Image (cartoon, rainbow, N blue to C red; front, side):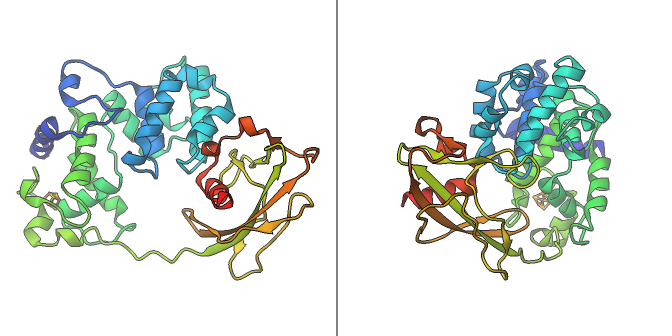
Length: 345
Ligand code: SF4
């Protein structure tokens, strides 16, 4: 399999995508080593999120907290606020826990060891493999959606995902070289993202066009096969935006466990199945008015529709009101920001 990895690495040396967290292959050959902190940060942010969405967040985090020690010493609320809009907020909570564990247990150095990485908060098998290979050049195989697609095509594998995952992982492991495994991992991902794209693979310019079984069979655009997903259920609920006449907003920090855990949000009802009556339980007694329209947001496992109620209340109304000068809509998670935007209309 050495020739296949050599061919791909030769392509990567010329065509590697520029990424803010990546050491380009020429610099790597000149002896520049990746910063494990930057690699870890990027991998956590990239879980379930695109490169395009992550870049600005990555730059902001690295500018504000340039080392793992800086991040470990940060205020939880500052980190959660900076993460707002990136979604999957458990990642932000684990980011902090992991930074603090690296400081407390590993002398501020990410361990160059797959098993030790796996024990850190928020680092699962995929992320441990990515950090091991990309940051430390250890021979571990990274298998994301891009890699699965490339493997399904290279080996003309027609078993549908997710059942095909173990087969595709075995193929990917067999191709992973002992030399430059970090560059190789990034090369396969780049190939999948730029040439072996989901709908129209550019086989004519692919470094693996000759050995590729799906190209030879004419099946590339149909792979990987996927088992159809079930339709997501719809839930609904109500949020309440209370504003004091001095401009302060009634907000709550959501419970640590559960969706949007630890994030700021508007008080509101539970989110229940759309077949049930829409729940309503205002956080305080006020002259509530329903805003025209509704908020629609999609989470991993369901679609959410929210009614938005607004009220202006007296200055002396008690509760967790956030003063006007402390309130930054950008620090709200996206669904809560949508409710705020709707209320502004
Ligand atoms: S030849 Fe085509 S299908 Fe095969 S790996 Fe390359 S781009 Fe993908």
